[in-house]
Image 1 (cartoon, rainbow, N blue to C red):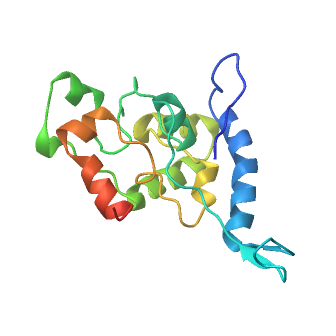
Image 2: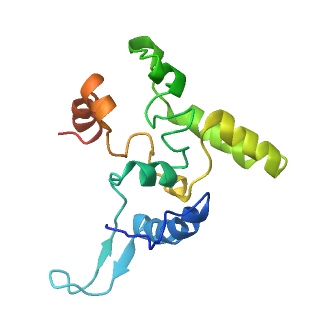
Length: 169
């Protein structure tokens, strides 16, 4: 699947969600399966299923699509909880605690359930995450299905781990 979002600039805030919502609606139908009445190899018809694989795009797009702050925020990483302060101080090792889907989903829920826009904005600033239509896909984990950036690939060896443990290669 290849997508291009028309410019002239990048979508601001939740604007990308409107675009992604339509894609997710179709992917949900494909995940459940669509019966094709006739194909070349199956004249009697066949159930066709599909799903979204890894998300490969530029860093700004990845973060917007998975509902995270930009790289210049106080939460610059999609994989771990390192802060921009820790990056500037060149902290390494145990300071970089990996993100997990449970806490990610809880932070998104807290953002979505904030009592008013002002509290929602504070929650967004505190956690750096918000809702994204991709989370409606039952099989898709935004913390595992995104392109690995150089910091995690080179310093933490996550590319090899992802290829073996996620993709089974």
